[in-house]
Amino acid sequence: MDPARSRPVDHLDDDDYPAYTMGRAADMLGVTPAFLRAVGEHRLIAPLRSKGGHRRYSRHQLRVAARARELVDQGTPIEAACRIIVLEDQLEEARRNSCP
Image (tube, rainbow, N blue to C red; front, side):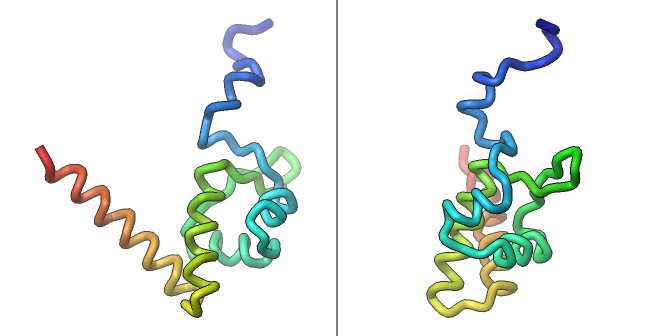
Protein backbone atom coordinates (compact mmCIF):
# COMPACT_ATOMS: atom_id res chain seq x y z
CA MET A 1 0.00 0.00 0.00
CA ASP A 2 1.23 3.45 -0.90
CA PRO A 3 2.07 5.29 2.37
CA ALA A 4 0.88 8.57 0.85
CA ARG A 5 -2.65 7.15 0.64
CA SER A 6 -4.57 7.03 3.87
CA ARG A 7 -6.38 3.91 4.91
CA PRO A 8 -10.20 4.00 4.84
CA VAL A 9 -10.34 3.48 8.61
CA ASP A 10 -8.38 6.72 9.06
CA HIS A 11 -11.52 8.59 7.98
CA LEU A 12 -13.84 7.05 10.58
CA ASP A 13 -13.04 9.70 13.17
CA ASP A 14 -12.46 12.57 10.74
CA ASP A 15 -15.34 15.07 11.09
CA ASP A 16 -14.17 16.88 7.95
CA TYR A 17 -14.04 13.84 5.66
CA PRO A 18 -16.67 14.25 2.89
CA ALA A 19 -18.33 10.88 3.41
CA TYR A 20 -21.98 11.61 2.59
CA THR A 21 -23.67 12.12 -0.75
CA MET A 22 -26.29 14.81 -1.07
CA GLY A 23 -29.11 12.26 -1.00
CA ARG A 24 -27.78 10.52 2.10
CA ALA A 25 -27.09 13.85 3.84
CA ALA A 26 -30.62 15.07 3.07
CA ASP A 27 -32.10 11.82 4.42
CA MET A 28 -30.05 12.03 7.60
CA LEU A 29 -31.17 15.62 8.25
CA GLY A 30 -34.75 15.18 7.12
CA VAL A 31 -34.42 17.91 4.50
CA THR A 32 -34.56 18.10 0.73
CA PRO A 33 -31.50 18.30 -1.50
CA ALA A 34 -32.73 21.82 -2.37
CA PHE A 35 -32.25 22.82 1.28
CA LEU A 36 -28.64 21.63 1.18
CA ARG A 37 -28.06 23.49 -2.08
CA ALA A 38 -29.55 26.64 -0.49
CA VAL A 39 -27.26 26.57 2.55
CA GLY A 40 -24.38 26.11 0.12
CA GLU A 41 -25.54 29.06 -2.00
CA HIS A 42 -25.64 31.19 1.15
CA ARG A 43 -22.07 30.08 1.87
CA LEU A 44 -22.84 28.44 5.18
CA ILE A 45 -21.23 25.21 4.03
CA ALA A 46 -19.15 24.39 0.98
CA PRO A 47 -19.44 20.71 0.11
CA LEU A 48 -16.54 19.07 -1.63
CA ARG A 49 -17.11 17.68 -5.08
CA SER A 50 -16.43 14.13 -6.19
CA LYS A 51 -14.53 13.48 -9.41
CA GLY A 52 -17.93 13.27 -11.10
CA GLY A 53 -18.95 16.67 -9.72
CA HIS A 54 -21.35 15.37 -7.07
CA ARG A 55 -21.59 17.17 -3.74
CA ARG A 56 -20.12 15.33 -0.73
CA TYR A 57 -20.71 16.41 2.87
CA SER A 58 -18.76 15.87 6.08
CA ARG A 59 -20.22 15.22 9.53
CA HIS A 60 -19.18 18.73 10.55
CA GLN A 61 -21.07 20.21 7.59
CA LEU A 62 -24.12 18.13 8.47
CA ARG A 63 -24.10 19.48 12.03
CA VAL A 64 -23.95 23.05 10.67
CA ALA A 65 -26.80 22.33 8.23
CA ALA A 66 -28.82 20.82 11.10
CA ARG A 67 -28.39 24.10 13.03
CA ALA A 68 -29.75 25.97 10.01
CA ARG A 69 -32.68 23.59 9.77
CA GLU A 70 -33.58 24.22 13.42
CA LEU A 71 -33.73 27.97 12.78
CA VAL A 72 -35.72 27.52 9.57
CA ASP A 73 -38.14 25.20 11.35
CA GLN A 74 -38.68 28.01 13.88
CA GLY A 75 -39.68 30.38 11.07
CA THR A 76 -36.37 32.08 10.28
CA PRO A 77 -35.78 32.62 6.56
CA ILE A 78 -32.94 30.45 5.29
CA GLU A 79 -30.73 33.41 4.34
CA ALA A 80 -31.11 34.87 7.85
CA ALA A 81 -30.51 31.46 9.45
CA CYS A 82 -27.23 31.10 7.58
CA ARG A 83 -26.13 34.58 8.58
CA ILE A 84 -27.04 33.98 12.24
CA ILE A 85 -24.93 30.82 12.33
CA VAL A 86 -21.95 32.56 10.72
CA LEU A 87 -22.19 35.37 13.28
CA GLU A 88 -22.56 32.90 16.19
CA ASP A 89 -19.44 31.07 15.03
CA GLN A 90 -17.50 34.33 14.69
CA LEU A 91 -18.55 35.37 18.19
CA GLU A 92 -17.50 32.01 19.63
CA GLU A 93 -14.13 32.26 17.87
CA ALA A 94 -13.60 35.80 19.21
CA ARG A 95 -14.44 34.63 22.73
CA ARG A 96 -11.98 31.73 22.48
CA ASN A 97 -9.22 34.03 21.26
CA SER A 98 -9.80 36.68 23.94
CA CYS A 99 -9.82 34.35 26.96
CA PRO A 100 -6.45 33.61 28.59
